[in-house]
Every structure is written in C-alpha cells, then in structure tokens.
Amino acid sequence: MAAPSTEWRETVAPDEVSRYADYAEKFAQMQRRKSAKFGTGRALHRKQLLALRATLTVLPDLPAHASHGLFARPGTHEAWVRLSNGGTDRARDATPDIRGFAIKIRGLSGPGALGNTTEAQDFLLINQEKFGFPKSDEFVALVMAVSRGNAALLKYLVGRYGLLGALRLMKKFAATMGRKFTGFTTERMYSAAPIACGPYAARVRLLPARTQPLADASKDWAADIGRQLAAGPLVHELQLQFFVDERRTPIEDASVDWAEDVAPYLTVARLNIPQQSLDDAAATAFAREVEQALFDPWDALAEHRPLGDVMRARKAVYFASAKARGAI
Image: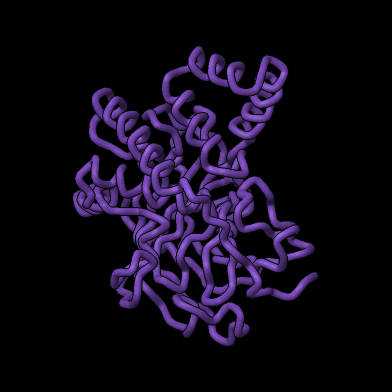
C-alpha cells in the first residue's frame, strides 16, 4: 500500500484542441442522426431509465488528502440521480450495454472546473472499472463505427487492427458488454478516469446499497429500483481511490485499473436514496427535468476538475452534445 501523492502530471498533446473539436463534430453528427430516429436526446446514455431524488452526506473526520472541494467539510447536500443505458440507441433493458449512474450534487457555490462559478458537482459513473482504450482517439472511432451497425464495426476493426486484431477486440468487447449486470442497487459503479481532489488525483467508486439482486431485474431496470425502494431507502457509499505514482496509477492511460492493494478506496460520503413515488405526476415532471438537465464531468468544482486525455476529450464532446439537444 502506497501513500497518496501529489506528483501526478497531465500530458497535453499539441493537437488536442483541433482533435477534440473533430471528435465533438463527429458526435454531433451521430447525435443528430439518432435523434431523427429516436427523438431528441443525448449522444451517449440516450435512454434514461429513472430519475431519483437523493442526498449526499459527506462524512466527518476525513484524512487531509481527502478533505478538499466537496469533501472539505461534513454536511448533507441535495442530489439528483440519473440512471441510464449507455448506448446511442433506445434499446431494450435486457440488451447488453454499459450502464450509467450519474449523480448531480446541487446547492453548491464555488469556482468551477471551466473557470466559471458552479452550483453543482457531477459524478458520471459506469459499471466498468476502466475504459477499453488508453486514449480517446480509439474510443471515439469505435463509437462512431458501433453507431452505424455491425457491418460498419467489422469493417472499421479489420481496417485498423487487421483480421486477427479485429477478432481479438471483438472477443474483448463481447466479454465487456456481455458481463452480467444484476442491477443498479447491487453493482459497483466507477468514474473509470481520474479527477482532482485538491492537489491530489483520485478515481471515484460507488458501492452498492444491496448485495442480493431480485429476479428478472434486467427486464425493466426502473421497475427493479421500485421493488428495491419498496423495502426501504437505498444507501450507497461514495469512495475515492488516490493516485500514488504514474506507473501503477496513470493519469493519461484510461485502460489501466488502479489496483486496490496499491491504492485502496476510502469512503468519503454516503448517497441516500429515500423511498419515493416513481410513477405519479410529480415523478414524471421530475424525470423530465432530469432528462433535460446537464450531466457532465466538467460541471464540477475546480478542486475536482477531470484529469487525463479521456476526460479532456469529454469536455468538448459533452458540450457539443448538450448544445445539440438544447440543454445549454
């Protein structure tokens, strides 16, 4: 076990501004194509499954390296939760996919990651410990190919990686997408890429509220949450895992999972989702408000600004996506 370190560094490539602008345009074009088919929506995580009201309680007596930004002092904050399937389409819940657990902490006030003043801190989490590629360029190319169907995906993979490389990657993707997902109350969720925590760097993890999934959860994830809430409030633990050195906890390589025996997780807050109605008029209006809202890793306090190539690329892409659907 190594001590948290402030010796992390970002490595910014000279072509990033133009390259990220190109990514943003590619995503915007894809988003327009999908919105024409499914209705106005996000480029990724298009299908909102459920919107939930919650609170986040920051714990007292945190160690000095964790006591920054949102976690500088104990207290309870209002939170919105958006649960989603990760794809570009609106597929059935049982379809293999990445699952998203987005949290917006509200009612804050402080310098923002974009040089503004922000009232929110967003955490965008997925059910994957890491990204499939070290950098953003391969990820963007893959998403563009996937969005056009299996034939386009196969053509792209063979053209870029050769036949054997394409077969290896397809096997890897099938294992990733096909990994059994038991539900939003029973699965761990991860930022997969780091953010700042004051002078430190950290990844974020959300531990599940339950240990036992309910039968047939995958048929309807929202209904599964409703059944779970009927038994009582859901309490998740929010954790940070701190950078120790570039070799074992790299900032710029999003494909590396930081090992827990090197960089253990620290619980810094608890996310409480109280029992609430999910299908009355008020819940429907709230779900609409959450669907229209901005959920962006860069809608963050300056002390928690996103770090690394993947996160820097997301700044341009998320801005373009939000603009395309009228969220900003």
